[in-house]
Amino acid sequence: MAKLSMHETLPFDEETSPPPISTGELPDAGHLRDIVTEAYERYRTNREGSVADYIPVLGKASPDLFGICVVGARGRSFGIGDTETGFSIQSVSKPFVFALACDQIGYEAARRQLGVNGTGLPFDSVMAVELNAARTVNPLVNAGAIATTSLIAGDDAEAKWAAVRDGLSRFAGRELTMSTEVYESESATNMRNRGIARLLESYGRLYFDPEEATDVYTRQCSLEVTVHDLAVMASTLSNGGVNPMTGVRVIGPGVCRRVLAVMAIAGLYELSGDWLYEVGMPGKSGVSGGIVTISPGKGGLATYSPPLDPAGNSVRGQLATKYLAERLGLNLFASEPAEAPPDPR
Ligand code: GLU
Image (tube, rainbow, N blue to C red; front, side, top):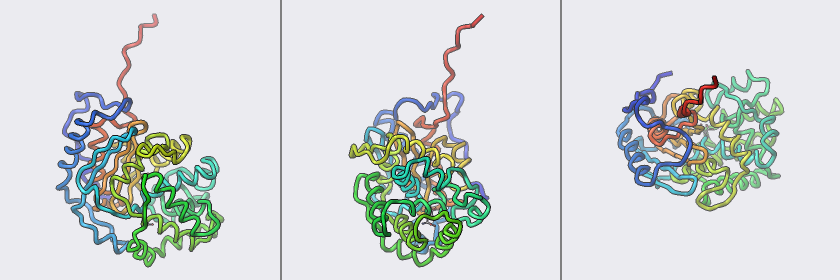
């Protein structure tokens, strides 16, 4: 796989700059604005990657679109760039629907029925189903995601769809609606997902009718959001499952931290390990160009820019997030040495 400039060296020295430790709070409003603006300006002119077009309508998105938004766990927010542009949520919906499923059936039952490990394979892999005895490996690749949607409570497809739309709307703090254009384009070309659903059914690892489950999943992926919506959704996961803008508890705290664990394992397709190595936070990307990243206790970060790397992750989104993880001190694995302990002798 071609490595893009995600792997550039950042312009500050990790050994001498203030330690980017993950405890504490986001910087004050002025610093936050300055640092997010720096990230935006730094990557705005990047021209790498290509816009997804395997779902035909996605190919119409301008490669110039770029927006960043941060929403703190106490509801403070700052956005820059194309923050008002609507786009389909695509795979960024997956951790949130997994969260709803966990909330309904319990996170241990969800682990048994869906799995929580990485596949190491592309998001739409059939081989991942064939090669793993459990068939679904995690809820963030298509097989596990369609199975997750099939688990959502509801006697028929309409009831399941209402539960998905309502739950994702509670994460976003406003009523989300589906883009009919995206839904029709994806429905006309989603034979592979329908095949995956049939395959899961054959192994007894789908929990609803395969055609209908795939259809609800396709509607879910067609929900229209802005980068601000995604940042609010991410901030809810950073805040123990309570939406900081509305005060509504969307999921329980135990579910919330398990969702973040799965995002850390599998959020950035087969580059999830590279992401964790560089960014040190759970995230989830989608093929329309969105990425959400969660700094537990601090806030949610979202980026939107359609050009993708070969795995399906937004190029500018990864670069900006990596920059912000360092500059805002968000990396969960960063620590400062304690004061030297007293000599025990
Ligand atoms: N709806 C898309 C699909 O099933 C989602 C892909 C993605 O964003 O990873 O192919």
